[in-house]
Image 1: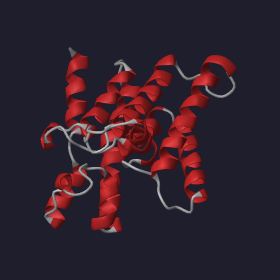
Image 2: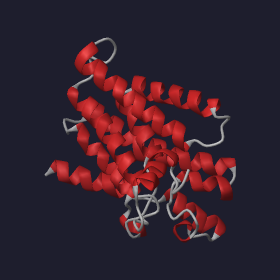
Image 3: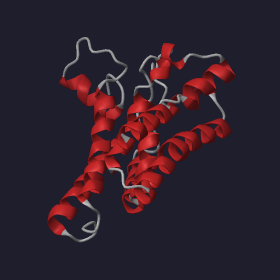
Image 4: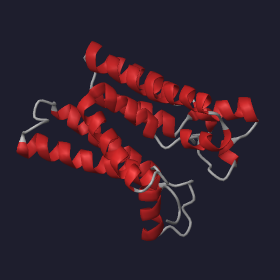
Length: 212
């Protein structure tokens, strides 16, 4: 019963569409009806100041991601898997007709809470990839960083036992579930499933758009 209660609380917390609310309040813009059709924080770069972006990042990363995951990890006996409801709520919010963001910011907050080493490695790889392509687009660097780190952590934990052997299987599978949710959400694009083929699916997952 307690598990269902926290799953509901986490889904509800994740469902708070901070970017959507900020743009409605400040600019009278419904981001779901714009060209982007999702409420991810990346949409703020076109419409808002750096202060507003930092405020939204704090809300998504810290309030919706880090703090709940940290509490579950350190102060409860609940399964760590329950944290995925934070991402599900963020991506499919009941407050905005089950639309939402792409899950990246909340996922980063969760990863920082459950394994700071994994979070730092993802951040380092992201910065390397991002700088190498002259900071033009962050979509590909983020997904590559997540994919590579997940592969490294999985292989090391189960086979090499060099760096991540002390992480529990629950941690490893939780990290993997986060990656799967990110990939699944990206594969949906802007919810336009007509004429979907492998090329479009590849572009959505790696470049977060219909075409590269």
